Length: 356
Image (cartoon, rainbow, N blue to C red; front, side, top):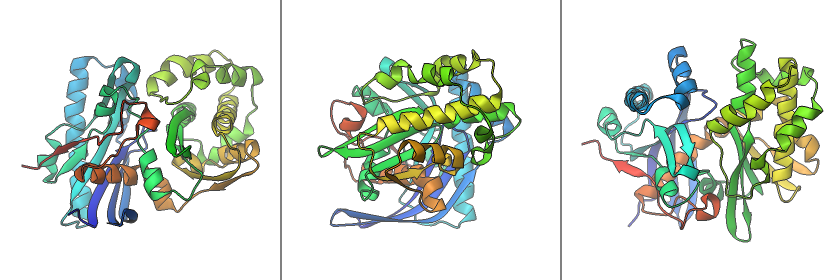
């Protein structure tokens, strides 16, 4: 018999490099109906040293990546242990950790999330469920996005579930299948330009709003091949570094205009990506705090009801859902949908490490 209650810590580090998100969650499941409560949550920011390392790791050699993976696993273990101690958390069923994506090349059968080495379990003295993407890529899938099954199980009342983080992605039901895909870069680009102004990010999109939209640049970005592809499809930082930034950099315009133009591009691509322009759009992720971006999305989707949830769900939804993915893995149940990733079949993904 399966348990009806699970106490879990979900751990996530996203491409926008805000830090490590941790959420202590109690899941209850009865008659296949799931409920959850986020009891404690925290984002632990990266040190400047780690921030710089993670930003350039995409270009590391194999040896340097191995060392980075070991060091990051130690860092993650320390962060998780501190969180457990601080909140006096006892009797955990598991810690479910995404790790941090460094390389994502599903077209080459390869994806790398660091922080998922076996020693993480003994280091924190807990059962760990992690490395959720590799198996999907081996089955011919994109290895992303993985959040949609959580959208289906926990947030089914909304027509669309969207996350605005380093990249935007969306999930929805179509012909009794969950469809999901990455739409475009978001904070990976916006933060890059905010950093050039000496800021971590453009607070509420205030600087973007003062800029002017460069029509030629927005047209060139909208014409990129990725946007013409059918789903399933996913994005990695390589796309930003090799394709998007070189295009933006070819325009000699002020940074505020680059920010304004890219925000407009993001909003346009979101509007294009949604098959039905009516209903409810549930938005989470750091981009939900960008008032100018929200304004532009609403402008391009005037009949859509935009819903932004409580702070805990908004900021920790991915940690919440990777916690759920881990529970589903512990139960031997499907946690990755082939309709989303393009894999050969639905499957139960992830690796379970014992603390002993």
